[in-house]
Image 1 (cartoon, rainbow, N blue to C red):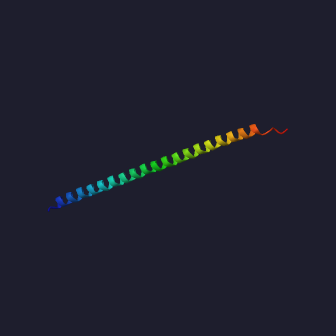
Image 2: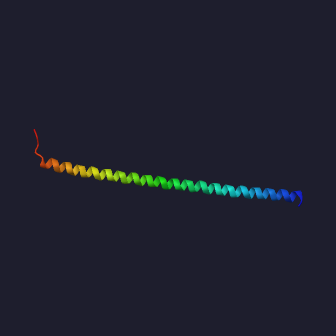
Image 3: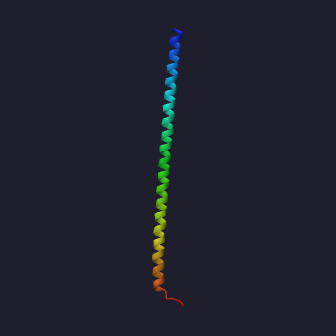
Length: 76
């Protein structure tokens, strides 16, 4: 093969290799970013469920307090 053909083959092979590596790198980065979104969503859902549980417990305690205050005589 001539020197020009070898240089062309080397250049095109290098560009192709860099392109494949670049696409692989971008796909890996995007996949990791998407997975971080899943983790954030899971944490947000867990926090919301915990908040709802606290609110429900507060309401139960409020009802219990009102009931007990209604049956307990007032002390003066």
